[in-house]
Length: 258
Image: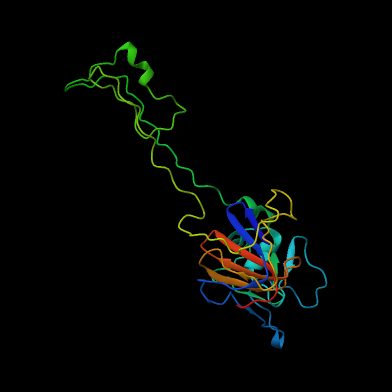
């Protein structure tokens, strides 16, 4: 069964299958979780006192086996914003008993890339003191003026030729597709059973059915950032990072091979 989860600027692809066999993904280990509790020394970052029994609202205490990616995945957050809110720098190492602040505002901190249009320079009403002057446009050329709301990079110019000029082509658009450059492949051979339902936490992906022992492949090349069963409801889970914005998750496997 595959789950696809799209969270603002970060997209998760969750695969529910049988045995996980990852093809073409790097074997770089995930960001480690280190236990530095020996000797009673306080760990760096937001580490709670070992005697504290309660956590502040909107916080999470790191357990053995957790990674920043899995915590963000579990709470529906962008791992980059979660790291920024807690002062955690790459490679995003966290520690057992560290308290992570789950900033819900991280959902909307990533803004899409928008190409801004340059405002055309204001036309001067004062004629130049010397030099050749450009003949004023005729009354029929008013329709060629750029309205204030038009997205244009250059102001309209009056052509000396009587033939009407073609409208300028649209400017270069910025490719904001997070999956640009990623070659996706179908991770399993079984039929699809159910799909992604926006807003429904129980259907945050697509499901692919299969028989026990069927291979499950990585949907694209990447790096394993989580391998474990600490996320309730996903069984044996693998999370792969494909680029800075795209991750895929593969859950409910019979056993993990990475």
